[in-house]
Structure formats: C-alpha cells, structure tokens
Image 1 (cartoon, one colour):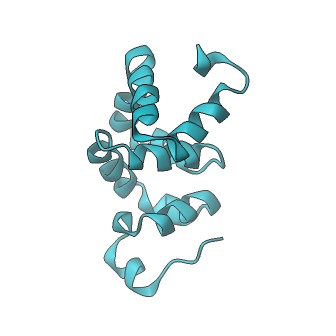
Image 2: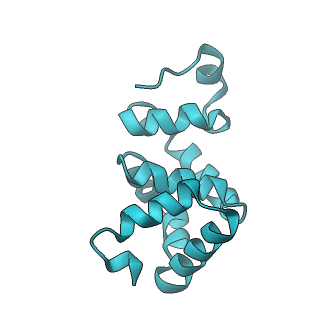
Amino acid sequence: DIFCHKRGVTVTAAILSSGTLEHRGVIVASMVSEANLIEELMRCPAKLADLACHCFGMNVVRGLLDVPGSVAGVRPALWKKRRRLSRDRYGCQLLYQFPEVLPSSRRESGVRAR
C-alpha cells in the first residue's frame, strides 16, 4: 500500500494537491476504502485541524478541499477549528487560500500568510 510506504504520504499529498481530478478520486477512494480516513476526520474536527497544522498535512487538506465529494465535510470541520488554524503557521496559510472558511470579521480585515 502506498499509504504505508515511507514516502507514500508525500506522493499522496502531491497527487491530492496537484494531480488530475481522476487521480485525486483514485487516492481519495483508496483512502476511504482502506482506512475510512475522511469519515474519521469529519467525526473529529480536531484531527483535521491537526493535519492542517502540519506542513505536509496542509497539502492533504488542500487536496481534500479540491475534491468535489469531500468538500461538504471538510469545510464545516475546518470552520469548527478556525480559531486554532488562524493561530498556526500552516493553518493560517490554508485559511488564506480558502477564505470562505474564515469568519467574516477576519475575512474583511485580511489574513496575512506567514
């Protein structure tokens, strides 16, 4: 399995962040069928926030936000943890790229990417 390989996470993150829609779908389907990762992340927004606050995990979350089927679950989970994300270097970058996750007051004032 690619997910168990030493560099598999890096390859998976790269495919999710810049692969074609078809390739992203294959990775997401594999993740769901093998580990139910997306469902687990949706049940516990803190885990998704942990992932978003990591330099490589941010790429995985960004990739999930680009996959049409998972957007409905990812954005509400990020919304719940938006304060934590706004205080983290990588979380702040993610919120800057996806401003619809930000509360309106921060969106109006702008968020600096660190």
